[in-house]
Image (cartoon, rainbow, N blue to C red; front, top):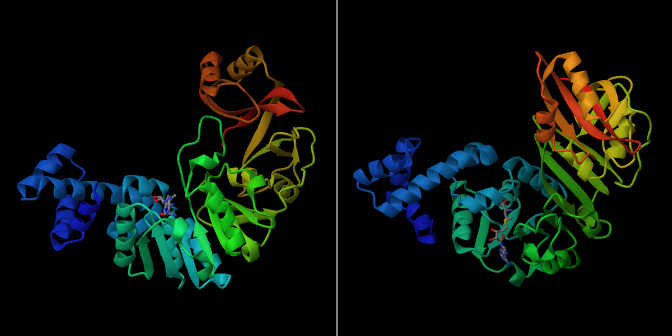
Length: 389
Ligand SMILES: C[S@@+](CC[C@H](N)C(=O)[O-])C[C@H]1O[C@@H](n2cnc3c(N)ncnc32)[C@H](O)[C@@H]1O
């Protein structure tokens, strides 16, 4: 979609085109385009309207009911912060007394819009003209006070604002590389210098970001939504409240905080295994979770926890361990056959085995289901057979 077609969609003719596209969308795309052409729409407007309707449909997962009146680009939607996460951040900024905010690289505006909803006056800059036009359209559509400008974030006099927020774009880093400063836009050097210029800086980063890159004294926060790790955020200067925080957004949001440097006790495998949420693992708060659960690790390097009695927790998935065996394909196959296990959920941590290949090699058959955990216990490759949940 071009910048011009974004403008077109906001004209009265464009609004009608969007209504018509809603009516015909869902059918075969070619048939839908022909139907719109038959109603007198130009090919460009028909295509822009159909694309927008399709993107709005997909955006519901991130933006809920607001999606119906917002404007999206494919890339912008992919990079946009989920509204529920943006809202939490905005609430925290407002509670910290932030009244004016510069959003550097605002994309379609998810974070900027959320901040404005909490009464923060937002200046949002975006380098890409089409995306900037959509961010402005989104603020207008939702009736929110966000001043959007198409500009280079590096030219913004950030010192004028109470706080600054940056969510840099990231090209996919090379295979196996967790952090590549060259893949950031605006560049990492600029991003990393922001807390020196504006103490109340928040950086949204890829969840794989290295803890060593946290500015001194900053809080590292990792967020998951329904068990998917979605982002890391560095809360700098006076915005930092704790060294590390894990935020698990589900129907209800729960948080775990701590130093990120504690070590969990290590001991034998127990009757119950806990697979911590990825936000807990990435924020290095497994020891804090172990303490809450009265649990131990089976291996100092592997983030599975064990207890002898079941403990309720929303911070980990719990499995009941029925069998513990040193890993051997032959022994495992025999055990599964003896138990009549034909359905197997396989999870692993600290094992190089390929679950799908293993599943084939196990030649499963039988009426029952189970979970298999491939891991190491005290350094030794181990298979844990668990009751299916
Ligand atoms: C990850 S997206 C931001 C998403 C946004 N937080 C949201 O939730 O909708 C990063 C944005 O920064 C923009 N960008 C990259 N370099 C920039 C620069 N130097 N100045 C301004 N914007 C820039 C990109 O075009 C992209 O839209």
